[in-house]
Image (cartoon, rainbow, N blue to C red; front, side, top):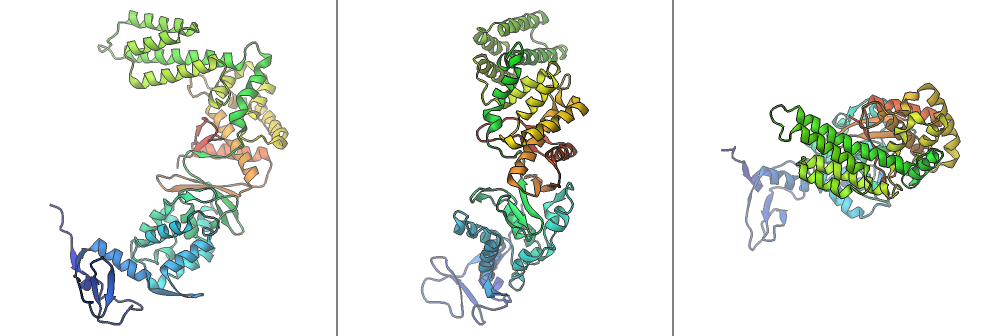
Amino acid sequence: MGEKKKYRPLDEVYLRESFAKPVIPPPYKIIIREDAEVLIQKDPPHGNVEEYRVSDEVAREIRSSIKKQEVSKTEEGELTASAIIDKVLDMDGWKSGTRDYPALLERVIGIFSRGEIIPKNFNNLITIQKDPNNKFRTSLLASPQQVFAYNDLIPDSFLQLFEPGGGKKVADELWGVTFKAKVNVGAGELAFTLLSDAVKGKTGDLMFKDLGEVEVKGLAARMGGDGFCHNHTPGELDKILSSQSESLTKQTLQRVKADIYKKIENFIKSREALKGRVTVPKEQQIQYLNQIKDSLDNAEGLNQLLTNINNFGLPANVQAQLKQAIKDYSEHKTGQIKGLFSPAIKTFFSLSRNLSNEQLVAGIVATRNYSASTEVPELTQYLTNLLEQKRDIFFPKEGVNSYNYNLYRLIASIHTALYRNVQKFSYLLFLNDNTKMMVAYKFEQGNLGQAIESLYNFYSKFDAAFNMSIDDKFKSAGITLKI
């Protein structure tokens, strides 16, 4: 059996607590009316009134609620904890222009109630907002490209607002506050303003005086864009290949066919490796592969191909992959390549060894996330120089299914650099929403090419993963740092 919960009478727990400024003079008497309103009075009222015994957890919540009504001395006079929280949210820029601010205020006050506040210290929450000597500024932003844990950045002055253990609990819950202001406010953003001298940014997510704007990005971060790469990249790549004997559509079709065949061939080889457990004779496997190849070579053989896949007894995950590939095959067969950024770049750069330097550079320029016509010449010149120095970046590695990781890293770096040029923030702050680890990237003075190169190395340092699925909603590459 588990340990029995400790219960105490309300008058025993609260009526003898020492408050800085009691609501009423002693002796205290806590009673609960029939409608469950908690009162502190000298004399119990007449009528249906009972004393209740409550758990320590409920007791802490009631005590916290009582303490929130006590006042702290501030520069603007004596304020309750709730009034101080309201003032701080206003100082940090969340009150003006934020939808449903009363609901946000109530939510934040509720989170602060999770920790037992110390009324005489609570005015320090205002001081934190004005103090530049905080770890978010002096450690995190002062040491770009160094990983920090969220808990290690919580200032001692914040922890001192609560009884022991309460500050970490409150800070942890503040991390998860997300809501809709003029733009989406993601995890961590509100917490950083409450724990430091940061305020809500105008273009970026946060702003630190004298340091500039900080853009906050979580897992699978998108770097913004005007829709260029979704709407125009496939068509631009097709134009570049127009001087070749085959168009992007036809080349994509051939690549998808090869991918389907390779997936099935690899699956059959894996079954051959299971000695004594192969349920399909090798001759039948070879025959099946030949049927697949015939179906792929025959533009009208898609239905038969699907029938074969269903009949062969492939695992569900393999079937799902192949059916998605066939869906792509069907779309490309009818020339539906607009908006399919990922298949388009895979196909284009799978031909990279047959393309000229000018075509390769034009292809990378065409993958940008903003039209950015004024920056195209600078981007083109940088990529021309890069191609002469590091030609392997533009080519897929032999035998690697995901094509060229370095190429994806270059595209993501271009997307990030152009995003920064449009938004003008000084820092990018990458967060891992699960581990609450974070790392800052600082943009230094320099041209577009230098920014791209620096970001390229930064993403390599943190073994970033890139998502090239781009559509109307996600207008740039997705980036996840392994922190």
